[in-house]
Image (cartoon, rainbow over all chains, first blue to last red; front, side, top):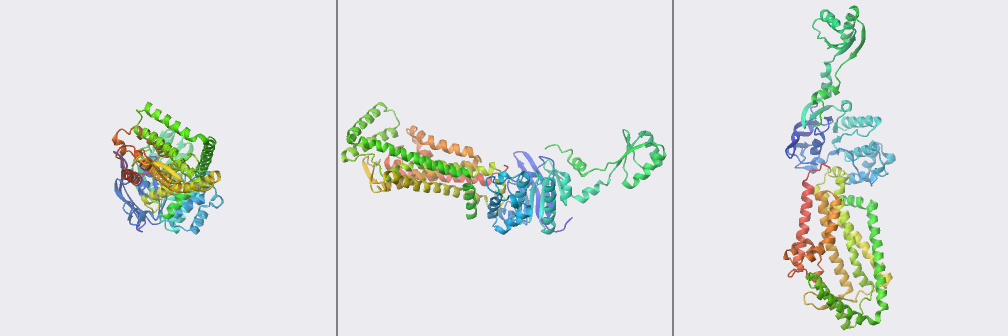
Length: 308
Length: 317
């Protein structure tokens, strides 16, 4: 884990609406140059948390500090270095992409050179002077990213940024974000319910459910925890095979699943087990790796992802 | 702040809708001008008998007043004012209805009602549309306070009202000149003062200036109300329909309720300051200063609610 000071500090962040608690007691830090994933099933409170971070909605209790400024007490200073897309990138449809960028550039005193630079960065040169209402969802995402990057923020917050992007676009976005984090030392907060994406993009992932933080872990840790993998071997007489293995390899916990055996062994141990079975006269129909994916892990942690 | 106003102006004038409003206003102005022109030329053909006509007209009005004595007092007062004016025309041998460019301009200030409606449409939309379009989320996450953003929107709406007013002034000056010949600014304008109940005159120029000024006060109030509803309820439909209904029903409603003295605290009882120059006074004891004070109170209240609800409420659109 990084030791650089946190750019975004979240402390005991809570949001209540009426007597319903939407977000409860979230605490975490995001250091400079980290891509931080915010993972949770629909309705878990991801967007509500993001709205509190950017000051769109009030905070019931707790604090959000960005670059040392409290987002409630010092809003203008805190938000100065934040670029964000909250939910869908909704722009002024009756204006061109370029006019939209000019609009937001005026609010942060950004010059024309930077506008051109950002247009190139997101690859919208060809259509930038067309009206936004003619854009596809993917192009709107790009324009959304462009407005978020205009003022060279040190914190970039993207809510479900891959929505509407094609696979090439997703890959490009991923490369952008990694580049921004590594080269420009921008801290990126990305929310998503898509795990595979988070796996490829993020350094650390916070999982929230029912508005509560379930776990914050470096992705490496999460994946290494998956060492508890298992192998499924389909055989003709499962019960007899189990008896054979229990005597041949004592200490191995073998369970029978229908016509198959489930063995908690690593890849290196597979040949030895297969050899035993073949020598014992069993027919083997298949050997499958039953390692838990990050997805299983996520479902396990969030308890199946019921909508809160 | 200037950047913000520039942004709001871009969002107003880059929409075709805005130019449609300008076009509609000009079309209605032209129709109004020709309607006025045709009525006047008809009057001129029956010119020789105008004195006799006015005498008969006054008799009719007097009969009406006797028959409908139960009508609200402001309406009866209005009838009496017509009689006094007609008597003045007869005594001083001035044929009424002779239109000049400037007396037309006095009438054309009525088209300011349309400017008020269109400015109220823009005002009702300017905050609410950011919510319905979802763009409010991008607008409010900039290093600008919500108060500044709200102010820039209000000023831009007023600028739009001013822009329409200038177009109206130029267009009606040109049309008036073309139809009635340029000039007539120093001709007398006849009115009955409620202070002494007698006929007075002022120049047409002064009358146009006063009419325009009073219409602008009405515009300011309606636009501010529409803007407040837009910011508070975040719905352009509500803002626009509320302010239009209020505008058209408000003044009639207060006329019919004039027998209750509490009516004087209603916004619409105070919007028509012309009553203090030409009558009739709505409720006994109301004065120009009272109405101006009431308008100021409403104006500040509208701004306070708009500001409170825009800056303090959660944005969950």
